[in-house]
Structure formats: structure tokens, C-alpha cells
Picture 1: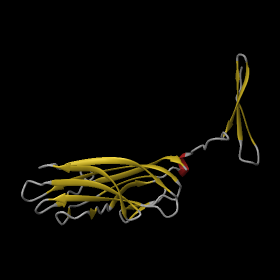
Picture 2: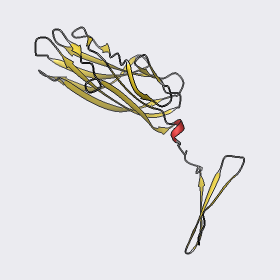
Picture 3: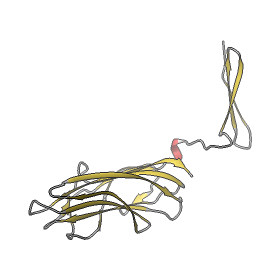
Picture 4: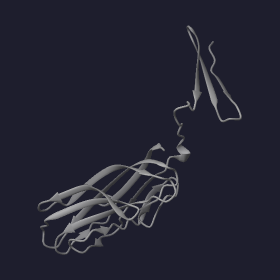
Length: 177
């Protein structure tokens, strides 16, 4: 019967030895060129806007995500994601915009990093776009960088629609730095 041997040392290296038909294969984790991720250090969160948020027409407005679904590393607060592990984060958001007149000329979903516009996730020009969503891969340094979501809606009586089905913000670490 074959056996698997796992051995470690004080440097933090772990060797995994798996016997094969032709001999023994050894894998060292982490490899010299990589990093091993464990679930305990991969921040992820999901939040949403719980009730409608009024906005001024034609003004980029921070979306007030006030309800967390989950936050694995306590990095989400005050509508802001501030990861404490340096790395690359996939962030996604969706926003539902409504108005009292029934038409609009522009609807945008914007990601902000450190208080400045980072990208237009979606820029819709036309009438009656009610729900838009987008995503981006953003590097965060793990200490001072943070990400927020803004919406821009040109319409009379504009608001962002509350509820977990309509206006949401999620993020997950894809790879450490």
C-alpha cells in the first residue's frame, strides 16, 4: 500500500511526498516563485443598499451600502472596502436607478480608489436603463488603499433602488501581491 508523507521544518516549508509507480515525487509548498493562499487570508465581502437613496441628477454620488451579507476579514465598513492584505481584488457592483419621469439620458457605475475615480465600470447613454452592473480587477496595497462605488444618473426625481436584488457591491481577493 502506498503512503503519502508530509514533513515540515522551522522555515515554514512543507514537503509533500507522493509515491508513484516509477519512484517518488516531491512537491515543496510554497514554491520559490509562488505563494500558497489559505482561506483565512483571502478577504471577501458582499453588501447592499437596504432602502432607496435619493440622488441629485447629474452628480456622481457615493452609494451607501448599509447592509453586509458577509465580510470574511472585517474589511468592509461605511460603504468602503479597505483590504488589509496586499493583492489583486475582483470587485463587482450593480445599481438600479429609478426616476419619477420615466426617462433618463445617462447612467454610470463608477469605481473609486482612495477617493478618486478609478474607472467607469458602465457608462450608458440613452433612455430607460434601469439596472447596470460591472466589475474590475484592482490592486490594493493592504494598508491604505480603499474602494468605493459611485453612481451617476441624469434624470428628474432620481434615486438608487434599495434591496439586495437591485443595488449591491461585492469583492474577493484573487491573488496576493
